[in-house]
Image (cartoon, rainbow, N blue to C red):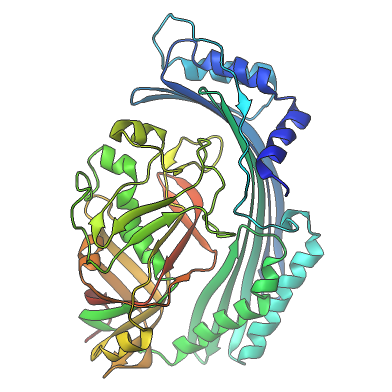
Length: 481
C-alpha cells in the first residue's frame, strides 16, 4: 500500500461517491441542532475464516460488512446513529437521528471536509491474506497439523484456525479533517490434544499481526503446531501446582497480558473520568515500584494492536502511563481529553461502525530493566515461573485479578525444575506492581493473538513484557506450597 490514508479515501469516493461535498452535508445535518463536535466513521470490512478440526476442514466463511456511524457530542452527552447503507438518503436520516442530542436552533457554519494525509504507515503488508485462495490457507493448516503430530505420538488431535481481515476506514470530523486507513489483520490459532492412557491434556497457542501472507515467512505453521504440541505433552508430566503466596517470575512476552488486564484497563480515561478506577485522581503519585515503566504504543510496526489513526481520526501515538513507578497519564478519546484538558492520545477505538467510541489500549508493555533473566531466577529459592496464559478477569474499580497460567514451572534453589499444571495467579494489579523487585533486559512483544473485550466490544491489541520478579502473588493450586 503506497499511502493507506489516500487509498482508503479514494476507495470510498470511487465505490460509493462519498466526496468532500457529501461529507460536509452530512456533518452539517449532524450539527443542525447544535453540538460541540461531530464525526462520520465509514467502514468497509472483509473477513474470512477457515476452521480445521481432526484433519479436515470443519467450516469456512467469508463476510463483507459496510456502513457509517455518526456521532454528535454535546458536553458529556452523545447522540449516535448508524446505517449499513451508504446511500446518501440513508446517511442523511442517520445524521438527523444523531443530531437530536442537540437543543439549539442556531444553524452551524458549513463544514469544509478536507482530506488530511499522513506520510507513513505502521503496517508493512505485502499481499493481504484476504486475497489468497482458500486452498493456500488450508495448506497452512495442514502443515501445522503434520508438525504437531510428528512432534510426539501422543498428539491425538490438532484443531486450528486461520482468520484474516481487511478493513477500509474513513473518518470525517466537524473540525474539517478527513483521514483514512486500510487495516490488515491475520490470526492463526492452534490447539493440540495429547492423550496418554486416560490422561488428556490440551494446549493452545497462536500468532498474527497487521500483516499479509508474509507473516508465515517469519513464523511458520510448523513452529506454531510444534509449540502447541510441546505444551500439551509437557502437561502430561506436570505436577500439581503449589498453593499459597509465593515469589513469581513472570516470563518475557505473553506475561504482558497480565499487565494489560490488571493495570491497563484502570488507566483508560473513561473509568477515571467517572471516578470508578483505582487510579482516579492519582496522576503524579507513586502507583508502582520505581523499576516499573508502562507504555501504550500504537506505532509498533506490524503489531496486532497498532493503528495509523484511531477511530476518531487522531494519529496513533506512544503514551507513557507509568514512569519509574509514578502515574503520568491516562489513555484518552476526544470526550475524556476535553474533560481533563489534555490532547487526545490516539486511543479512541470501536469494534465496528455500529459501536460507540471508548478509550482503549493498543500495544501495552513494560520497559526492560538491567537484570538478566538468569539472575532473576537464581535469586528465587522457592517460587513459580509463569510463561504463558489463557486469559483472566479483572475488577476495574480495585484492580483485583485472577489469571489462568497454561505453562508454568516450579523454581527450586534458583533453578527452574518441574512443570506445573492447574496454576492460577490471584492478586491485585497495583499491589503486584508495587512488589516488582527486579526487571530483566529481555523485553519481548508477544506474538499477535490477543483480543481485548470491554463493554461488549472486542478490538485487537498487543502485549509485551520483560522477565520480572514479583516478591509475592497468591497462587491458587491444589497442594500447600
